[in-house]
Image (cartoon, rainbow, N blue to C red; front, side, top):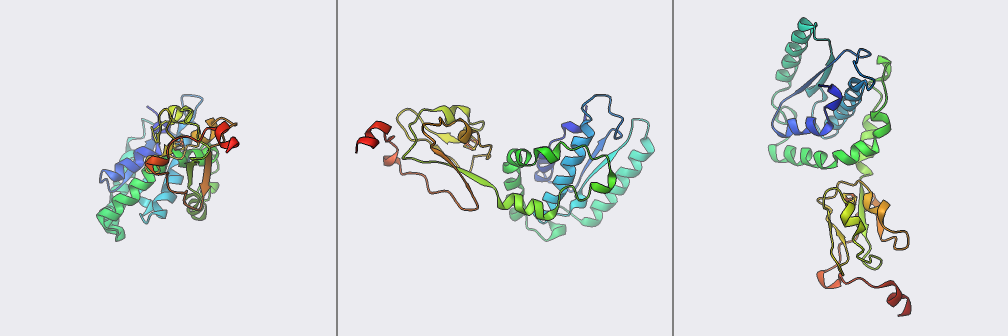
Length: 237
Ligand code: SF4
């Protein structure tokens, strides 16, 4: 019912499913029926998504948002016709930009995996109500998005500190932590969505989780090194 419900993940999924362009129609700005003004959320999301498309080598014109009321049939038809012409001129997704299908799938999959983290990292700017049209284009910059991807964190559980309490594994939203009783926990970096929950919930007395930025985390411990070093024992030895 609301353009504010269109998530960055939906847009990326449409491109993953082979769409050459994505057109979002929202209600007119400042005419939202609710207090949420979700169309502003959609606008900020689209501005960020267009920068992300650019960042991975896709043309940002493949994504467009326009605002109209249910009485604006002509505006809608004109908007869609113009969008279709634009996308046809760009050519098929990826091919129009000189990106092969496998490379394109890999780039989109990487973005899709990072969507929760992108939304977390940019939550304040995504919630901004961009009432001034002049400020919209520069709300997210190419450099900012490049920095965002340079700063993707990785979370690592130190096998010397983990006490296998299970709290992080129980709270991880995507089951990215392999653990169990008497087994040092390990983050599956492929599955991890970088939410930072494990760092936040690891008991302060253990402090077993570290956030790495700009450098890869150490490799996970070997299977035979996954017996927790009990704190008292470690202190005695
Ligand atoms: Fe799970 Fe931690 Fe990754 Fe969040 S940051 S997804 S809690 S492993």
